[in-house]
Length: 364
Image (cartoon, rainbow, N blue to C red; front, side, top):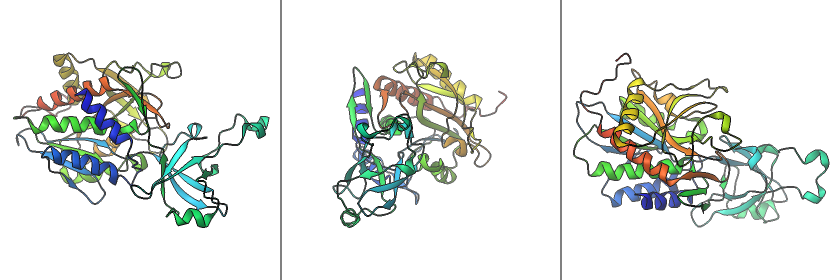
């Protein structure tokens, strides 16, 4: 399993897929599932859906993760060919300077560039500790003129991502672009392999969703059609095992998957998830039975698309689960394949435990 997770994650991390432009990622997932004999559908927004029919007396489940990544959109091309952009999603502006980027046109026709950083020898003392905002940065593709840039096909609105990169680290650890949430996509592919051969269990809808990094509502479109009674969302959990994060929690890279007991954005959206108690019990009990170490997270500043899915219809019994990750929303994020393997095992076993008698009352 771990070898398959590594292979899928590596392939997925090397595919650009800015929010609203996830087609290359979706194509890989769709082709991988087709090779397994799994049929998928795609809605108008771009969500990729695979349904595994099960016991109609059991609550139906939507298990989902997002395909898209954060980045930029071209805002203006200057006469000298330098490119200005708007930030798309929660780009860490502290992490932008001197990064290489890819301006995404079409497979085989993408254009590389670099976010310019003022020469150190010319940087004044008052500039050394200032961070440029996204609207202030310039991207250099080397073309030298607006006409030359536009001749490549670059226009206002062209998607821009950090250059896709994979960096294997020691042991099972892997770093690179868009670990958030291509790691979740790889886990969902592994869950699909398990569901393909199961003989019992609830109806499960696997959804690889779009536009999570943009407005967190891509998955809502799928949920409105599928009308699940249970929603389980896979995403990163903030690893807190480094000095800069030590006071934020007890989530350690390599120590297993996690569940979120509380998330709240606290900035504008005033949204988050307090998980359904039945779902907390499900994952805690499953982890005990399977002897899987289960970590716990409670964070302010974190938000997933489950926040909106949970409120549909009569309400959906919901929980966020995930894997520890370091360096979130930077050009090189980091996870541990052992955590992804544990998350796959935990998720597959939890799904199998949902039967006709699975109660969704909150006071049980």
